[in-house]
Image (tube, rainbow, N blue to C red; front, side, top):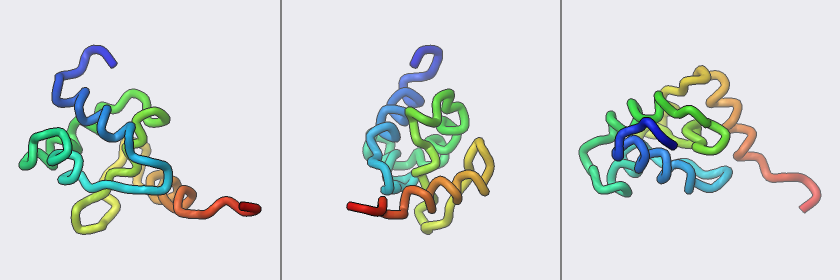
Length: 91
């Protein structure tokens, strides 16, 4: 992804690694990329996410367990998280 700061690129790369059906907190992402006090900056970077299908920023939640924000709207974020939490039938 071009046109983003090195920090934003690190955030996008870390978020792209979160598996389907799992979540991470803004603080966990900040620590993972080497900026342990930058949880808010992680959220700000995700606000600029140009490709939410590739960088699944809906999987990032607040450290308290609350949903947190989402560019596509909180209802869409909750719907996506609920959808991903379901187990496929027939397996």
